[in-house]
Length: 353
Image 1: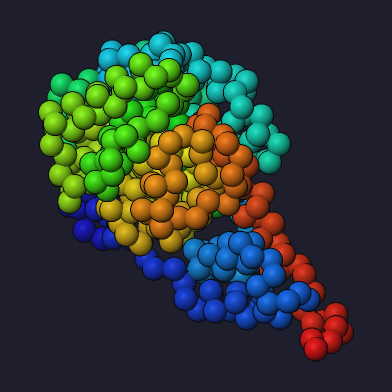
Image 2: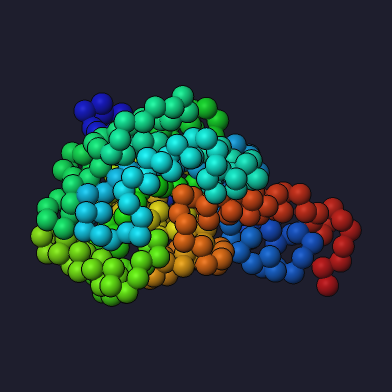
């Protein structure tokens, strides 16, 4: 490996296409199980994908982590959120103390929560906090770039390095989580910048803002795009100009998982914006993404369709944190167990016709 290449370049170079041989073996195995062909629907698709991702018919995905990236946003000064920016550091401490929704759900499914300060506008200290702070929140993208290109790359590489460490510790399945008051605004701006979607469609109510705030939020996205002119052909440029530090960190989580041949379960709107950027940086990374749910946030359906991802769940969730992704962890594990633990027609002595 050429050490002069950046961590990001090296990681992208390690991402390979899914293992076609393993997927064919999975298909054959699924067709021999005691059921009509294809009758387990998405579970069969997920089982095939897990085989292609890992190269194994029976991968052990029991050690799993949701990586919650936290960062603040200068665009909050424009009044785009129902909550003040001070909530970001407060919620980070809530994660670390085990009191957030993602903590409850992770305990329920046997996953670990890894909380990362990648750009919180406060100095936080906790023995379980992973500190990879690139800067104290982004700048206000309504009047200029949210961050420099170098800062965006540093944030992506921080996400990669965290996954590398976790994979080295034996984690084999990841989920994307985030915390950052105001972060549906840069997410929507990224969707518009990279897909050409209409602002009215891409920008939704986020934490539950009213009509006047929604109009203001859409105007802020238009101003940000006008002020920054992000290059649709350069995902890092768009990420730096109208993205967020935690979004960039999640891009790294996705790319790092793909480079380590681990499935990465993508949460809602913000995580999917990161998935869009990751898919533009490394198109092969899309094969490693498991879309968890269809968020209640306006624009998420359009975003998933653009990437080419079909969500597993539809629960009208819009919390973020990785909650929807964690809910999908057991479904991925169940799909693998069905493929490996169900009897075949031959082993069960069941007639096929």
